Length: 347
Image (cartoon, rainbow, N blue to C red; front, side, top):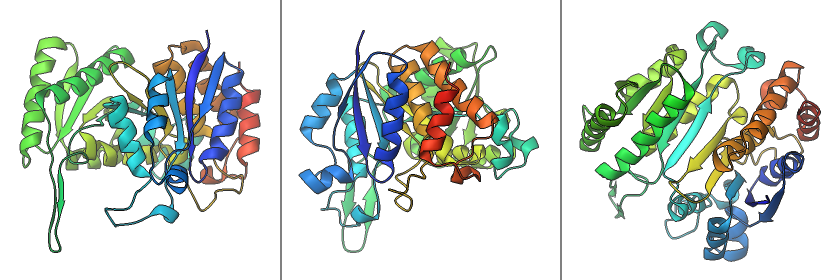
């Protein structure tokens, strides 16, 4: 069976990490890749970060693989001008990608690369489940010469949908699953609704899963003081955006973290957590490992190819255990050397 993959290399180092990822995938199955302009690259040609035609093609694909978007070339505070990040929001809405999954599991070979002490991160294995299409990022926005506002709205249906995803993910990850639902219920009305809906769903459908409610500021502190206490973190859009980036640094480099954005039906989108790194674009120094691991998440969550996904993850782990280190991990391996090291360790 041929799997149709829409590829979005995007900006900065995006094309440099997409190319070796497609090479890796070609050795694992039967894929057809369709490349599209996206982000700043699309703005330069079409004036918008995501065209209707590209969105339509992404909807027809079995999965969407995205590398990186953005860069100083397109930075602006003018609300009338297009920004590359608008393409991401458009894809999330257009594909109904309401659930963002970010696994954070520091590899033993990289324990000493983390800014935290080895004994603090040892054994950490957590998953951040972030609601992706609601909340303050998508609420009505107003702006005058002297004030601005961003409306945060959540519905019961949106909260139930993402909570169900988190509870199910926790059950799949562990024999003693635990969900930490993060909110700001001491201040925000949306968070009070969030806590009520999550609690009711837990009682009704997932009583075997341990549930705790954690205020977001406390969660941020616990992520650096006792990260292994977390299993599955469930939270809304903005809190999840911040906490998942914080959690990513436990691994020692944001260049190591993949993510998946899923819908109830239709294609998912898979992308590394890191940005477009314009400072090293074109130099062949980009770390492709997060892109490889994002492809593994695509194989597992998007295409149901578990053994192929495990092969990629094992190849990355063995390459690191054998000494592979890119510049962001304190080494000197360039993109090509990192790619060869992983390919040589693929089973």
